[in-house]
Every structure is written in C-alpha cells, then in structure tokens.
Length: 264
Image 1 (cartoon, rainbow, N blue to C red):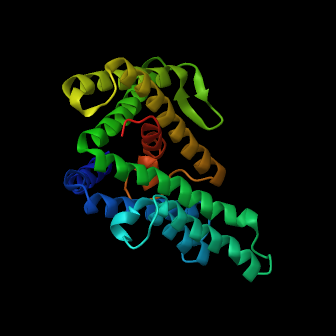
Image 2: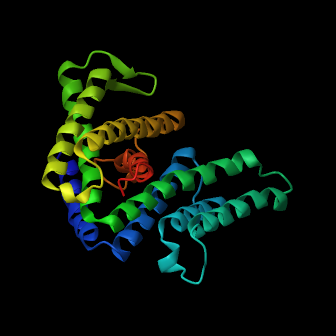
C-alpha cells in the first residue's frame, strides 16, 4: 500500500505540471507513454522491442501522437499523421518480401495493431489537451469516478459477475455504480464549468454514460490481452500500479470516443 501511494504521489508530481503547461510538453510526454505502451505489449507477447518490427511499431505510435504540423511542418495534407503511420505499416509488411515470406502478414498484424491501439489513444489525449485543460480533466474525472464507483459498489453489493471469463472480480452492480458515479461527477463538472462544453447538460449526461461504458470496456480489453498472454500486469514501470497500459487502458478508449462525439 505504501509503495502504491509513493508511486502515485511521484507520478502526479511529474504529470500534473506537464498537463498544466500543455503544448510540446504534453506531446512529448504522450509520445513517451505511447512508446512504453507498445513496449509493454511486445513484452507481454514475449517479443523483443529491439527488433525491426518493435522499432517500427514504436515509431508508428509516435507518428500518430506527435502533431505533424508542428514536428514535420514540411509535410502537406491533413492526414499526414496517418500517412506516416501507414509508412511504417508498409515497411513492416514489406519485410515479408525481404524475408521470402518467412515473416508473414499474420505476424505483421501484431505490431501494427499495437501501435494503432496505443498511438490513436494518446493522439486524442494530446488533441484534448490542445482544446483546453478542462476538457482533459473532464475525461480523467469521468474515468476515475467510474473506477472508484465500480470498485466501491461492487465491493459492497456486487453479486452478479460482469464478465467472469475476462475479469472475475468485476460485477454488473459495480459497472452500474461506476456509471452513476461518473454521471454525478460529470454533472458537477458541467455546472461548474458550463462554458467548456458545446453541448447542454442532458447531452453531456448521455455522453458520460457512453464514456463510462466505453472506459470500462477498454479496461476489459486490456484484461483480455493480459489473460491471453498469462500476465498479471502489463508492466512494472509503476511500482504497485503495474504498467502504463494498466493506468491508461480506459483512457485509450475514452479519448477517441470523446473526439468522435464532438466533445473536443
């Protein structure tokens, strides 16, 4: 417990100033986190990150995260980030030719999905912060409220398993408690900062339900990945908390959904 608290305090002491400053600081931090996330996925599968596919997967994720207009201003086109990402996909697929098909498209699928999964999630974190600190905090508060509400309600009255084959401890009652908790926090946030959002309160409540459900599903997806590879945590970079993916699994689903629904 003490280790978890110390890790949390140190992480917040580093992360909060970065979020406050925004801009290049957030972009670089997100790129580093994306790289670590890809590394954790490779580690769980038992692959070395110091390989052509590992390096290209990290580069692909970073290409997705860092805004091309700032970091590569000589490129043209609104889709430069995804085209750069696709360049790494082309190179990974091209290795099947160089290796005379000993490296197959099935094997190429993992590094591509790894960089896409992590890269798009952190890309939208960067986009949310560019829109404003309040938008970013809203996402964090909704996810944290969901996690806390789900844990507290599930622990007190949880009886019906939500998805026992993937996460045996999660319950339907806990999931519903997480949604209610997220709604309460979202309502308070919207009432205190109404100027932040383009949508009215009712719409934001509906969106919050979606974000809470999507966040919980993102958590289940990462649990499914860990169960598939037979590991307890995605990594060890955060003592007492696991890896980067353990902390950001919900966020990687929530931020893209927020962007899709026009919250930022």
